[in-house]
Image (cartoon, rainbow, N blue to C red; front, side, top):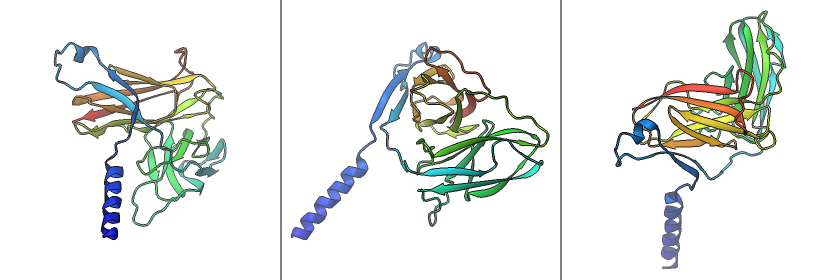
Length: 256
């Protein structure tokens, strides 16, 4: 009898834990002029929000051995070598990418191994590499990500700049969402601290706008079907734009 009672208690606890929803924070309902004038009161309001912080792998370390800073390579296959600590990089049966690279603000590319090559043409490159959690979101603690400049062929290094800049994990170019699915805007701020450097990020999804002053994923719900331009800008808290080619990222997404 005691065993049956204990089993029921454990089952109730498990069901309760699984059914508990994540708590939304910093929720903001936003209207655009087009929707506000449509007169459709039954249409759900577009909402921006975050979930309470649940950081994974805070001690994970990602080190970049190759390329070195401003190292020059011949056009063709360029080698990359990383070292990963305090992070379970390969799990049995897991087909998800855990290591991502962004080159010059483009879409992230995932890799199954920490040593690989990429076919690159002549030019100046900035790599941002980072590890992700089980949801595919970028880890954001110090040491979870790394950046570096290098050159291919006879290109010149990027002009020196001490300005912070952005790397965008989500959304990806032409990413598609189904009706009712959350859109995730997941970004990293590199070369600065959002609090100490008095920074903020402005997110624009067509006419919808939201601002955040910390490096956390932002969710967007209830977007009507259509094509959207997602613009993510890194700014000073006084609204001043930053110099540099990577302080702003734009992606096109589609809601079906």
